[in-house]
Length: 240
Image (cartoon, rainbow, N blue to C red):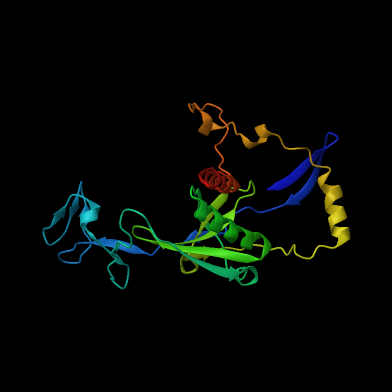
């Protein structure tokens, strides 16, 4: 991809970059076999095995690892209801050694004062103390590892990571922006002035995905973490 900027009607190249998904989740090579005899059935509107067994759906078969024959069983790790997650801390310098490929992102909302206070302390640590807050918990069948952080628009999010032992890593690049010389900063300021300002319409698209989509334009509901604390203090003052 060529990144360019339009300056006085002329297109000025900025950078040529190669965009790729830098990590995928490794998937084991598996096969479905007959649970009765261990042979691979053939499919003809259902699954028929040499031993005479018939199965109407693949879920009735046994899934094993190719070669070893080890059965893959989905063990339930968490029941329905409230899940307890464990929080851990790691120095940013140490965390930078690892690949933090994102599997998914989730929004975080709290309503009570104590949760708001503690969550704010954790986020301050990530911004001002060079700490990474890791959250680990069990989903129904899978273990999850996530980073508590904020998005560019300062939304509080849990960024679920692809586990290191399940990550298929491709070539990536890193940059160190901790030590910036005054000249570097001045050059960046001059360079950025050439870019046209981005407006709201830039964040919308007009392709096949929008066809038939009816959506009223509403302002997204945003709950400020500090607002929870202010509301709690006002309530305490009223009861005093």
